[in-house]
Image (cartoon, rainbow, N blue to C red; front, side, top):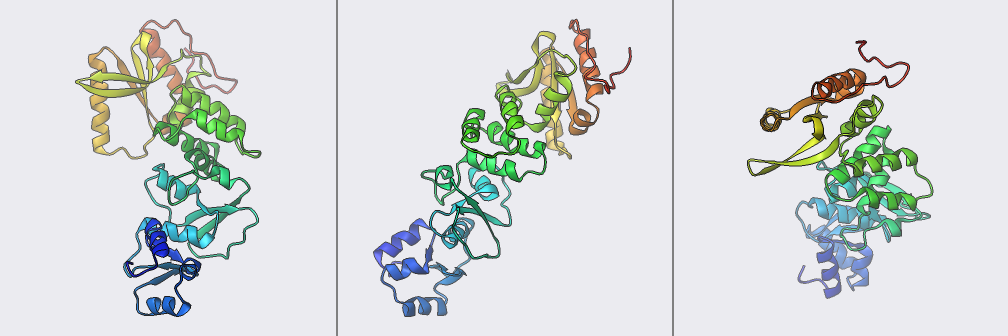
Length: 318
């Protein structure tokens, strides 16, 4: 790389070794010189018009730069790919998602998904490289591809629960979009996330169990210190020393189970009884869960009563 013209060397260094053919020509290399480098294996063609100035296997970031360069000026990594870069997901998607300005035509390329947006310049993060959408815009993009509201809500919960952004910032980004699926439901859900519902299951417990059955309002994400270590209660009815923990994992590894047991034991040592419910419990039998929680609360002084959530409520008849 040291033999390259200075401007091209700087571009290659900032783009993880990737350059466009146009950049190489503008820097002073001839078509023949470029062809020789490719022919001898010193360079390699990644996409039409996009070249790696090295011979080894490109790393992930280099491939993302190649995708941006292939999509052209204004191109920005978005959706699942931006989520990967922001740490919103730990598993890289097989396809690379890039958003370009409306009106731009990009020839189809295997492995790339091209989106178009009128406001990509506003959605792009101002300084991160390779260019990507801001975390709030990324979350909203993903909600628009979600198959269900729960899937959409999951992205917002993950971003806020992981402290990558705040409900307020997502709300501001929402206000800047003319069209947005799930707008009203997401706006209400952001208030609950602000209140501590950091997972979809915690949201479902609040909306399907606690509120409609008239249970007292729990404190959420309550920090407690035991043995010098911080722990958090999903929902704590502090006055009655009752905690509700929700577990959305379909398969709970042994390490996770013992961590939960230790947390429950620590709570018991402080006089708190812990009730633990799965995704199936909360979503398939919310009325039964409400009855169980209400019964334990009543044993500890809550005056009640647990009320039916509607005509089809399956609360056990006392």
